[in-house]
Length: 257
Image (cartoon, rainbow, N blue to C red; front, side, top):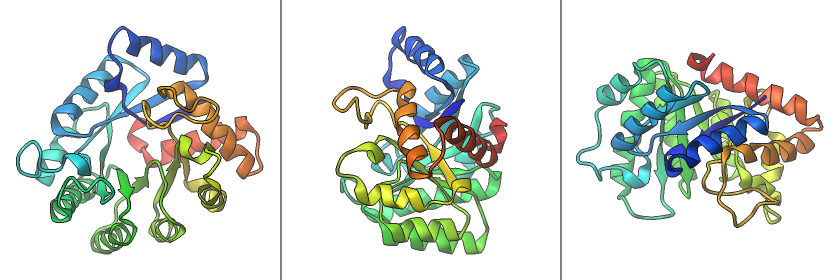
């Protein structure tokens, strides 16, 4: 069984969402995590996870949404949302300098609040990092030195230095359909070097449909295509990769286990 560790089921309206989940299960993706990108949307994610047995939720504010609902949420506010039994992690949060829609200092304040919530609760962070490798690595290292916490670099598309520095403090790395793209040779090289025990798989659906489905709307069933590429890179069978990434998921997101 595969687990889609990061998707956005709120982008699918009913009754399509039910069909999307059913297609995932039929494809061998037995569980999926729907991700919060704002406080309001995080509440929707909790409701979805509450309604469907094989769906979990993470709660948090995406860096592109930091400060858009009012002040950056306090760590205590984020932590309080994790009390729900279907919430297994915090995020997605992080830094995104590519879109340049939110000031870096606001993003940093938002990210710091989420890190503190992870330190308070013991739940892992789902981290978005884009065009911010040095600041991301520095913030993670400083915060981890103060109080260790677990985290996942989701939809990894950064450079090898960020991967190495995250791994050095216990981080996990998840790959999406980007790793299947023809021009992703450098990313595949990074994926090949990730220790097997730190590797997860995801879709980030409805975005980033993998080869051979480029140009279509992505969905959790397509986790199988990314996992197939990772299996080749690591010299193992698809079934072994499914077992490996699912075991890693349960170790990181221990509340789901």
